[in-house]
Length: 317
Ligand SMILES: O=C(O)CCC(=O)C(=O)O
Ligand SMILES: [Fe+2]
Image: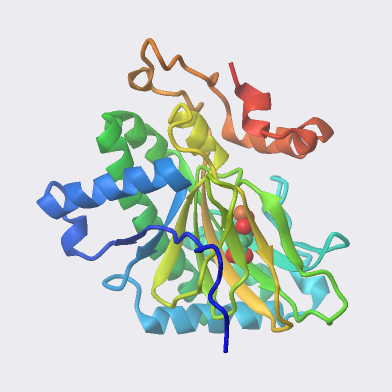
C-alpha cells in the first residue's frame, strides 16, 4: 500500500475562460479578472481552461504538425535562425542534451507562418502553416483577454492599448527527446521568461515545474484543454513588480519523449514605461523605461547570464 505524502503539493489556481466569463463588462468577467490578478500576484502564473475556443481537433492537429517538424533532418531545422538570441533553432546543448526548440517569429501573421514553413518545407506544407498560425492566433486571443483583465483591474488599460499595437508573437515548438536511463533528467534549467507574457501548452508527458513563493516546485499536469499563463520579466517591470515572473524548469522523470508549445509576447519598437498609476508614496517606480529586444540582448551577455534578477540588473532603479 502507498503511504500518504507528508507534505501536500500546492496546486496552481485554475481559471475558466469560457465564453460566459470572457464577455467584457459582465459580472463573470469582473469575477474572472479578480481571480486572474490574484493568481498572477501570488504565483506569477495560473492554469487557464479554454474549451470554448480551443478544440480537441486543434490540439491533435498542432501536435501532429509538431512531431512532423522535429522529424525533419537537423540540417533543415538549423535553417531556423533569428537576429534575436534564442528565437531560432536551439538544441544540441551539452547542459540540456534532451532539449530541442524552433521558433516562429510573428506567427500570428500569414507572412510569419509562410516564411517559416517555406524554410522547413521548400515545396510547401499548407497543413503545418495553417495549423501553426491558427494555434498561435487562438492563444494570442487568450493572452489579450488576460492582459485586458489585468490592465483594467490596475486602471492602466490605455497603456496596454499602446503595448498591444506593438506586440509580436513568437511561437516556440519544443521537443525533449527520449532519455537514456543514465542521462541527466534536466530538460530545461530553472529560469524566468524574458517575454512579456508566456502561454504554454503541454502534450501528455509531464515535466514542467513552477516554483511557488514558498520555494516548492509545483508539477503541472498536462491537459488537452488547458494552458499555463505565465508572466515574463517584461511584465514584472511594467507592473512595477506587482506581478513577478516565476522560476520554472523541466525535469524529465521517465524516459518518454515530451512535446510542449509556447506562445511568447514581445514588445517591438516601443519603449516599455511602468505606468505612473502604479506608483504611490509606498511604491516608487522600480524600473526605468526599457527596450524589450535590447533587454534580451543584455540577458545573453556574461553579465546578464550571471545576474540573479537580470531585469533588475538591466533597468532596475
Ligand atoms: O517545456 C516546457 O513546458 C517549458 C518551456 C519553457 O519554459 C520555455 O521555453 O521557456
Ligand atoms: Fe520558460
